[in-house]
Image 1: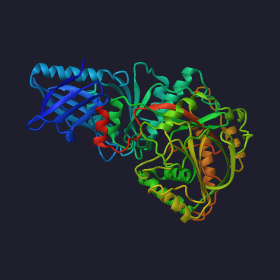
Image 2: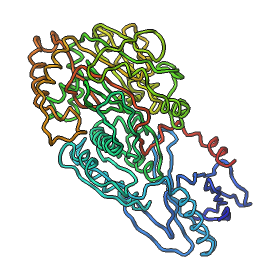
Image 3: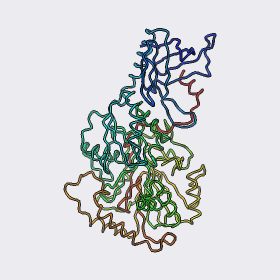
Length: 561
């Protein structure tokens, strides 16, 4: 069908309406039938949600009033001050029923032309216990009406135990589904990610436990309906923790690739990470907060204060592999936004090349990398005492830290940012932490170093303790091959936890302990000696990255060309 153009009414006001292949536009007319360009409304065709005959209302309750000349258009409506989206709804009145039918058919055909990228059937997992226990309510009251409007069918699973979603993805048939959706926090997303990556590698005949192997990218996309305590992944990829915004990204079929970091101990996969792999301060905060779960979300603030006062630092050896041909830097002041050139221009190069530098790692033992020159693509070694060691594949932004741990990190460029915070005073460390909440450069401090890397290896003092823990493990034959080691050695983990508790000698302010633990996306890792490697664009989300400020007049002129 060619372009559709005519006059329409919205309420009592007359508009000039135009439907092209790329956009739908309506402009108010004055008494002389002249258009007012300052009040033009333009919606890209790809952001049309649905078209209904008559006057239709969806939220808060669905109702419909039949009319032979009216039709209702639902579309994505942006906020001018934030990345938040809402459902735009406009009821148009055509001069005749035939013209109304022409508009309805034309608009529906435009929606249909994007059907290949939009999901039609989704597998939804709801965590009814996460965050403030409102996941079920959010999904039923806000998301279900939108999915029904867009013609999306769903199969819903409410989880009753940890890792139920991961196990479901690993074992059940996923045929016929166009994507997975988690209604919960970062923990629920992590379950879906582990299940999907594990299943993809299993079907491709690839061992996740080989730290040098190139993993197979996942074909299904993951959508996140935020209903947790922090929702860091959603905030860093969409820009706001809003269920409606996330649902609309899913409905229109947005696609955002995402780098994933695999964490290994020897020849075993421990866990995957997309946001933070942190040792020292953030590991201590997580470990301490687990003892205060009865406090709810405030436990993180409490544990953060206690660990700050303890002023702990830990000795260790950090080895990192610098990213090749760096086109960006952790301190170049850029931001990864929707349509990021760094991610798009680096995709082909980063995903096609082989990481020959990783071949220096022995699969039989965790030998130190042989090379330590100063060139790019080479291993470097740093020893000393560290207050915090953080590796992040994204900015790790959240509502409390809008710019995140590394503001210039990218979502899909195949690299991660390594942040080393050396031993320092409480006041100095407080200065570093406070800069996560303002616009000051948190890396412009003498005790902080930051690098863009592809891999990290950490060795604590007395690494034999991890070797003893390995000897304690005796996984049974019926354990799933792709189950993370972190969940197969709970007995050893308990012994390590008891050992750490015994190392605490002097309470909060005089605390002495030889090693910390790793915080991997909100989970404590059972090992201290690890190898972490970044896998370029291993998964895809129903997202498009954080959008910049909406400049209405400029956007309209560009669309209408």
